[in-house]
Image 1: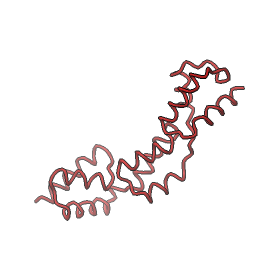
Image 2: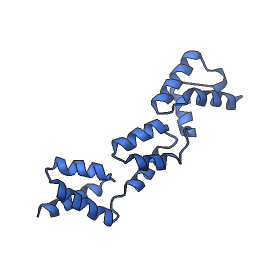
Image 3: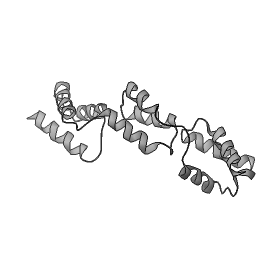
Image 4: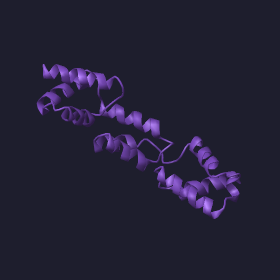
Length: 150
């Protein structure tokens, strides 16, 4: 009976969004289900291809790539409970360069008219913003944008 309730609970929340295996374990424990029941239902969901940490990690990386840096994406994957081996595998496929939309967003946010003649304090703020977004190579990114503008 409790196992059926747990299965229905997991199916209901998986209908709203994808969860990692560890997230489902946390949610099951929070609802006071015991560990053997949780593990049994997790295995059922895996066998039914309803949860797949590898696919979830790839989807997260694809969604955030270009908008957020590698550091930020890795942190997000850790928060979602993705295993380090899976993270290492999927992170190898992305670049740490922002996309054009992010570039345009920085330009609008800091009222930058020309990349080639940017003031020092604005440049500092733009670098800080890019670093906040997880782009560790923010100074190099900004320099590249300035070179491309010339």
